[in-house]
Length: 439
Image (cartoon, rainbow, N blue to C red; front, side, top):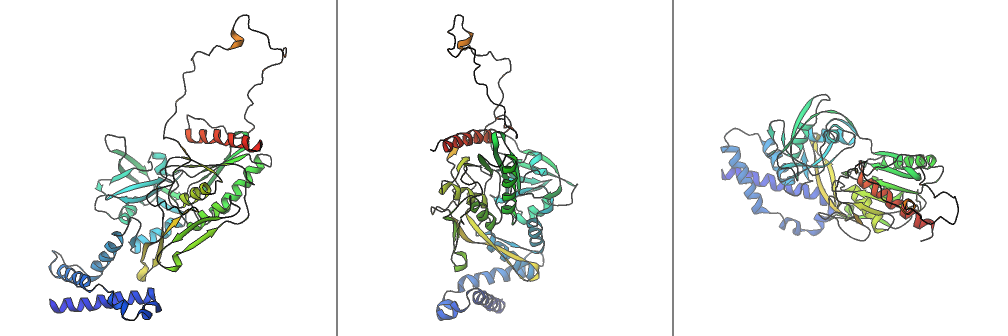
């Protein structure tokens, strides 16, 4: 046993030193004996002892690859919720997911307390249509408890052939009992930008996910809205609700589209490559027209970068609920045998130097998640001056009182359908009036 432990210790020591040399390069050589002194020999001996004990005494034979992969998986999973070892299947799923098309449910998830937590459902997907919400905790997949699964295993179970079904058992805040949703998988095509013209010439752009082409799609959408509005937009609502994030560069480019100068975001990590700064270029696709950004608890990562940059530069009013609070950057490093590791390499900071990690972006104007219902149509109309007998005549004679103008094209917004969007449009109208009056 001692001989085996000694051999394993030497193997593991050589492996650790090899990794250090690959990642540290000449820096380790320059430190001389400092690097060798930092090697945790006692911990490696403990690891080799556990490894040898499992290899010899576990109830069933376990091959070396399984033990080592599990060790790597645990090493990464123990760091934070976003670091993970990606085996062949998980790495393949990741590449499929980032391609923008895959078979599944359409939800962004993370792990919390051993359960799968929904960051946000993706727009126009089976999960969103079924009623899955940001913040839901998935505790069962069909009849299988989630407790004990890795995130990769849970995602693999939820993905599958379009047309097949899966039942999710969900715990939701405010609900006394778990909820069950039977959802039919579909081909998930993530279209990141949707837009429409609202009444009075105000634009609305919804970004559901940040992909490599999102900034270009945003510019095309704003250009199309400007044409629909007769050549000029009075303002824009940028909807980032339930946007779980995506590509960092896409968030930078979207922020840059509305800023003329200044810092957008910066990242800071231990290695020099993780220390990055992104600045705006002299171009505002709205030419200074007012903006409102809608966020909620499902707005995470890249969407928080955009909201934070526009808020810090006072380019937009952020409205809604406090965001998710994911202020870290992950790097994916491919390994041998089609595997990879994903691990956190930096934190990002808003232009004012604030980290939103585990804090989130606090909106300028908070809106509770409420549902508005329409008043009864048979409600009694209030009495007006003109209804009173012997009221004084208007000195302007028979001139008619000004009537409310009908919407000048575009879609109307109902408070009963989308209260947050309704309030955002009202605010945008006020900002446009102030701007027109030179305030």
